[in-house]
Length: 569
Ligand code: ARG
Image (cartoon, rainbow, N blue to C red):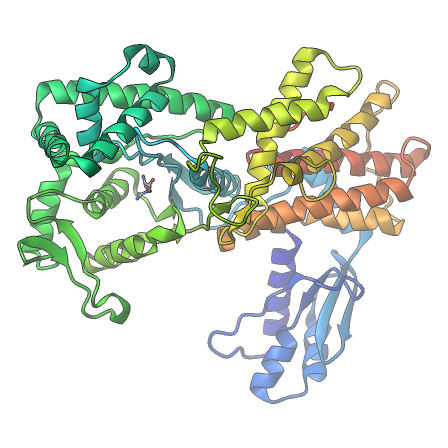
């Protein structure tokens, strides 16, 4: 990755020039925002000169004198008040293109200090529908896991399903009184949700029903065999159906350790927290107080209710222990909506009090809105189910490919699935995760603009060139990058490495999405400016190589977003 190599060289130049760096000052090189002066840029000389109160341009010159980059750069210049600008040479670029083509990682280097990272995402609740809000967690989490794996971390994905909790009181009562067995067989999640909603409504008007539900829940928690049996069936049926959805989405988990998995670990955990003085009794409940943290001083974390029941937070604390002990987790990323911010802040504080060193991150996200700018709802006012969204996406995408010629119906179906699901994923991943974005079918399925169909189509165009090619054309390594459009494309391709690494800095898939969109644009400009099949000799070889590399980077990059590609559309 050029950014890292240039940063290393720059730091060596500081050393060779005998410049002592103040504490905390690290010279770095970044991708140039304005490419008129170079491909990479550093303001290290300017920043340091300010601190040392010397002339920035003179300092920059001192560094450039010691800079050894002739193997990479055709030019290094000092511009403006003291910016260092690096222009890469054609040979270095060509070498990087060859690397992308032959490397399994498409030229994305691995990190020097790989970690063991648990990614906690999706985590729907049993008997409650998986709604579009779960889209965000599922897609962001899956993308982050894919990128982290590519850059060399050991990634453990865990679906912390909500399979234990107060909703089961209602489900149990409903199961025994109003369950429609035929409906359950046909669509278990839908029937469980219906039962849950019906009983939930009854509890609002009839205190006796509420009481029955409570008793059912207590029986379940005390291990009543019949209730446990029903609970097990609910979980198994829901998981089955969830797995079908994940299959469609091409999302996979290493583990499905739901909340219930930690049941028997909660009582001993609370006891140990109490005996070590971290938790204390307060009005009959057991809490952890954070008197030393001003924002949390009034917000203790409840870990056992006065009736003896445990809470969401208790389970999460037990889960952290498990992930440290069993998986040797160095980091845990929780991909969960922004409304749970307080929960995670408390969780991290308790963990800190316990002396745990695992690095935890709440990867929060905003909401999905309807066209009216309010929460995304169906016409009847219910939150929109994920399955319906996916089905509709594929149907609409089918209409888009319908007119295409030379494709069988089966092929059209397959392509529609790839485009439909890709479109929904891309609409999510191309947004900054904290923004509330509007869900728009027309926008996400458009063939132009920052959409999955546009990117998949760009990939298809790179592939179609090779179908028009006479047989057995062998690409050679002899590349001559001379036209500006060729150079711009080669440069963009090389920066796939930086784009991939940048995703993890702040857990932001949208940076990769933007990169791929720019790449597709750069490719189209190249394609318009530079004839490929009509060119000859080394020029043709170079252009074909650029097409081939674009293909590979688009496919790999979309793959990191969890989006599949098709050879035709
Ligand atoms: N089931 C929860 C919900 O739907 C999300 C769980 C997130 N993960 C966790 N370890 N708390 O709100």
